[in-house]
Length: 334
Image 1 (cartoon, one colour):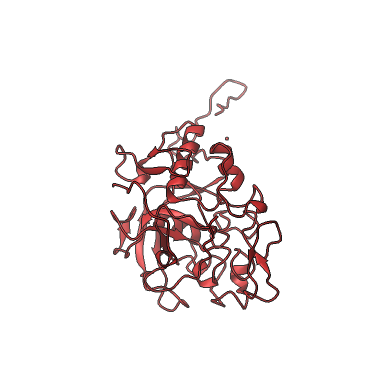
Image 2 (image 1 turned 60 degrees about the horizontal axis):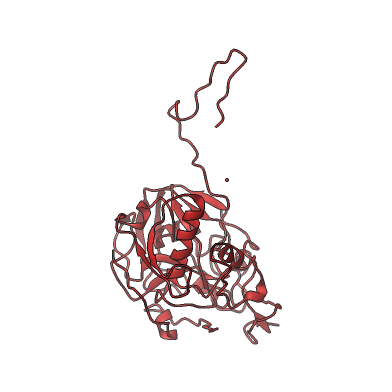
């Protein structure tokens, strides 16, 4: 799969799906053998033919392989026409960051650089204003730091001008043993965590910024509750009762899903691997088309309407795009 060398900065029109117009804010700027007293060594789980729990990276959770229905049902309020339900089987288990990559995480591996608009939010807040390519560059840096193979060939690594593509030795991203972005199917499977409702906390009750959606409020920061008072906040006057300034929030502050993942709805949108395009029929280990309008964004952000934070909601953006409501989290095949 070939990737483009560079892509233009996004216009607002580039952000929307074919069915819904997005009201996005775009701002510049870590074996023991056991022996008894007679020194008889007990067999370990592998010797017994039992399943062995894989060793996970600190801050990651295990997402076991399985099947689910991807997309939204016809009766889900304000669903997009690009959310056609279809069966997906994932045969490869993976570990996923429990929380979005923070500004502190990014700075620690990328030479102190912090591209975020909301720097006043602090190092525990999600990094944003990162391109799809910068997310892959960070994935390579994490792979190197953990002693596993890098997945991508990148030009200008460590710089904002970086461009990356999948190494030719891997037919698909899931084949790489290093860190990478999740595929769109992996992302939605992880976000749902066996649930079938609009949010992993329940159905959607209010689709806009106001009135407050009670199910979304317990799991995510969006345009109906993202009040912020640190330096460099965004003027959100009129978004909801009492709103004046809004912005990103420290990661992990809301309720996690059943697999221990935080902020899968809201705070910042998240880059995934796939090009945006129409869904195929039932698929196994799908990782997108060979090209498309842009790279898919998932989860919704601090600035957006409730319906964009649904588990099935999709948007897209050119891979070179940077938004103050757009970040990422990584996965690794197990």
